[in-house]
Length: 328
Image (tube, rainbow, N blue to C red):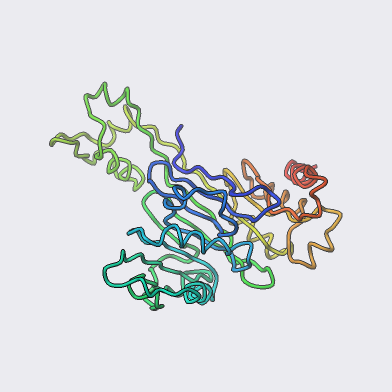
């Protein structure tokens, strides 16, 4: 079945963490963290509509400048989210540049920034035509634990301890609805934008006797369309957890956030034999990362953000994560 969301790491495991989530049919992409973005092309960066930043350590936030430079003259807004105080971090970045060439005739590129602590508490707006002066605006009305809630997917977040608040994220796709072209042909129905509304109706749980309007005034009942031309399956869950201390409270939150994930991208900074260093630096060991994945029942675990001390043993961390994941 064709997937809507295709995630992949931005860098190799010993480099800055971060993943790009390509929404294949939405002409957009999401980012989890803004570390080194040089592997991403300008075309990919121009597709980015939202970026969710775990915390403002350099290896998670230094790529903001490149994203800003690429997107500066586009007319679509950019939505950012991070932990409490993140609005100050973005404002500091923006005030570090001169904006005298921007005026009322410039493309009004707008950045919105949400600060999250169990729920979105504050929202700021930075507009190019105002030289990115910060304005506080009404935060979105979202349920606790949510950073984004759209027709096709939602973004959940949890706050972890890394010596400071650090966010983890999970994308939960709604029901996956694919179209069978042969089924449409048998029904004598055309491919077209009307199918997007039909998919939304399925995801909303509309009843089978609901009427779907087809192009040129035709109609069909949703139940017949589902039976003959739509393939419905559970949506993907993709979790992302980085830079968390390996204590019980964090582990419990991590298991909850990644429960049932199809893919879990998780830091495994240190080998099991270096647990004391991991505890001192508030990072996970490979074994703890694998244990979280096993207890959460994820289908696939992707470890990354390895310490460079293991560059001469690149297979060590993945092997330890895999053993713990399999319960050995």
